[in-house]
Length: 123
Image (cartoon, rainbow, N blue to C red; front, side):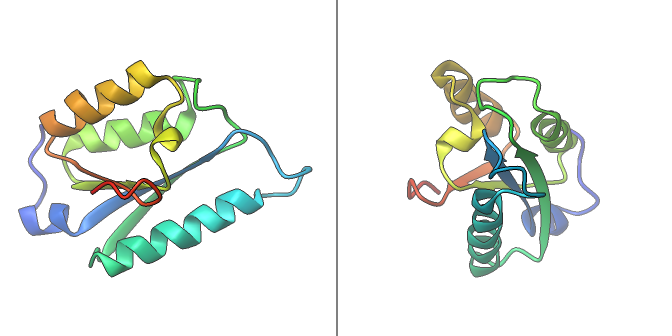
């Protein structure tokens, strides 16, 4: 893992990951995404994060392993500059239970990343 500029920066930085699998009738951004953003931003601020980095896949299924923003988020996490990932619920990460379990049980612990799933009361 690449060492962040400072450990304090890493601990104060979180990623929020927003995902919905279908669009809201062709609108620029689905209502669910807007609501997820509000929920996750509020949760991040309540937990004291000073830097919030957003990753969003709108209209993409959670079974797709090559979601553009998800892949970009994983790459940023591997760099070691983000200490926490906040999602609405675990299904935002992956609909495939094996993939979700691998992230939760292996990837996040190996990279010392805290996972918060707001609706699932996981922290």
